[in-house]
Image (tube, rainbow, N blue to C red):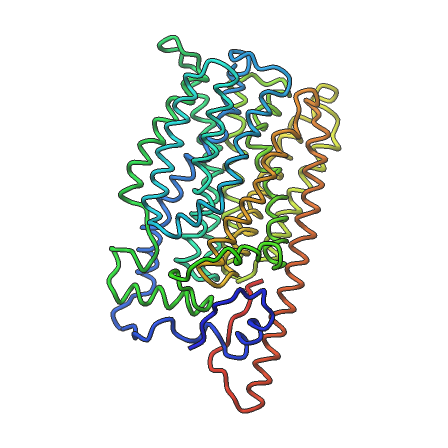
Amino acid sequence: MATATKFDADQKSIEKTASLGLGSSNASNDEVDMSTIDKKALLRRVDMHVLPMLVIVYIFAFLDRVNIGNASVFGMSKDLGLEGNQYNVALCVFFIPYILAEIPSNLILKAVSPRIFLSACIFAFGLITLCQGFIKKYEHLIVTRLLLGLFETGVFPGAFYILSMWYPRHASQKRFTFFFLSTAIAGAFGGLLAYGLGHIHAAGYAPWRWIFIIEGAMTCVIGIISFFTLADFPEEAKWLNDNERKYLQQRINKDIGDADRAEKLKFSDLTIVFTDYKFVLSALAYFGCVIPIYAFAYFCPTIIKGWGIDALMTQVRTIPIWAFAWIFSFATAILSDRLRKRFVFIIVPTLVALVGFILLIALPDPEIATANVGVKYFALFLCLAGMFACSPIVVGWFTTNLRTHKQRSIGSAWQIAFGNCGGIVATFVFPAEDGPAYTVGYSVCIGVIVLILVTVSTMFVMMRAENQKFERLEQEQNEEGRAVGEKGFRYLI
């Protein structure tokens, strides 16, 4: 039995993998009794145990991260006496611990129970969010944003890592996207909740404080619930019987090769993030995705308010934008899984977003041409829907084409850590003095969309070339009379 103990960046390992048909051999000598397994029913059970809580967790993680934008519309900046770019700095500092702790947090998650680690993080960042409702000055805001970034760091890469160990690649994208789109739900729900909380002036606290207090308290409750409900890895799931565990493990092993989670991580393994083109290009692509997404998450209410719309109606206007992004993105993911294609379903939504940004930058400012408000509002739909549709596929495409637990634990954290550097950029590309036209911000977004198109196109060409090499190697083996059995590993492109 062939065991993948090296990263596939090593060319000799790639050739050996193809010639031996790695992925067709069992990870376990134990046979699975298929007569007792209803595949569709088991998949539904997995979906019900794994997905809902992860989605709920990330709804509140993203909500706690970006609700500062809603709070700002309701007077937070004025009450705290923020001046100049202090608001932008407060947005930015979140990403410092969020980026630096990505890989360490995933290694901890790999070593311990995801349920314990993630639920502790959830409760902690919920508590920090609640505390933001009581801050008195700028320095307090900076400290709470730093702590929020630290405790949120493991949620997103950890969830993608967990999902990649439950689902084979051809069935994973709609589930990756369903999870990722919890951010769109958070955006819509956050706008609706902010609209409701904007009417509260209880106990002498301003409405923006109640946004933090209520949403933070809700997150703490979710953290407690998640301790009892979050799913671990298949081999550790108590709600599966032994036969079901074997089936799910062997299904993943067949899809990606040997996925031995017990394999120890060495420091030298981390060099792959600089030597494997997939790690480099996918990180750059996700960096390009993050900038427009976070820019809109933080500044969409400000952009809309700049068109002369009052604070309460601004929150309402954001809701359909997020709702449309959810529908468009999930439909894209379903088609991507059904057709078993990834590249084309990154390119098309990215071009949709590009059209939206071109409209925003090309049309005159609403103060000059009031009739353009409707068209610019429509352009926001295109921008957010396009970026939300392509981003989870960029992450899922990379993660599911990695073949071991070790690669995936490093890879998912690396891509997201590097990509989230774009979050730092996003906090500064829409300065207040550039509004309401925001020419600089829209131009930056157009630039990074070009980056996405270039990097994913390069990945597609290189992965396709490797697949062709695998095909040739297997064909040579067959011609020499040494059959390789089932078709070996191929990159899903």
